[in-house]
Length: 301
Image 1 (cartoon, rainbow, N blue to C red):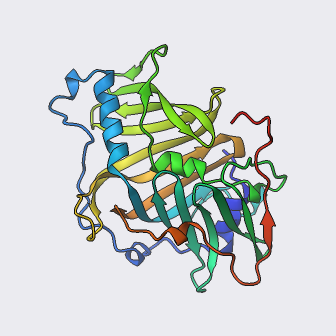
Image 2 (cartoon, rainbow, N blue to C red):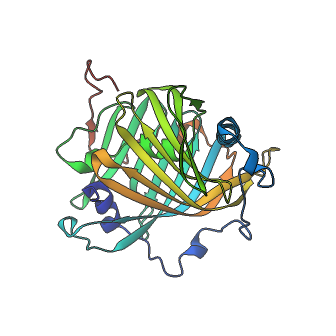
């Protein structure tokens, strides 16, 4: 799978060293494995019970703060070689569709990369030939630039990290991929992209979601997230609500733009209090602002 130059540029522009770097982000104490269901009764679960477990997890997370290493495999055409590179990133998310992903340059106080959306407008700060540009456009603007650096959008990350409640599709049979797996096909509520469906692939042995694949109204894949290393995490000290179960590794695939990103999560905080201004960052001084057009009027997505 190819990686767009946007992500490759981020990794070249300012990558954190990986070896010995975990200490830079204080992790939750002693990761403990977890399950989204009561495994003692999971053998009796029907489709509705597995969907209820997914919906419970979706409703449990109001907001998230993640500290992670973001890696991607890039091809030689992007000048970074066929090897894994990782960069430190901070992610803040809040329902229903607010997100901010920030990667700082290790030797500088300025932002090296940033992607944010307040649900109405997205903002994207990217390195461009040793300088930076700041893109602003509607949250549902289509990725149609000839320059792949400009085509990264928040939607695949929102799909992967802030699940939406699902409704079983009446005409779609549940797929059972093996003795340890169960895949549900569900309808998702409308968002700015229109009606969507999803396939939820459960690992029944461990009681966790293995992957979540989201499709548009035409049945075209929008994004796929693969999850592993589920563990218990903490809630914000300011919140009375407890923490819960969350994966420590998330792989995000966006086939239309040919990128694949892996988040190796070092710290997770449920119910983080994030100021609304965080999802509407201003361009750094002196950085050119580039407007991005919204979708065409006949765009059904």
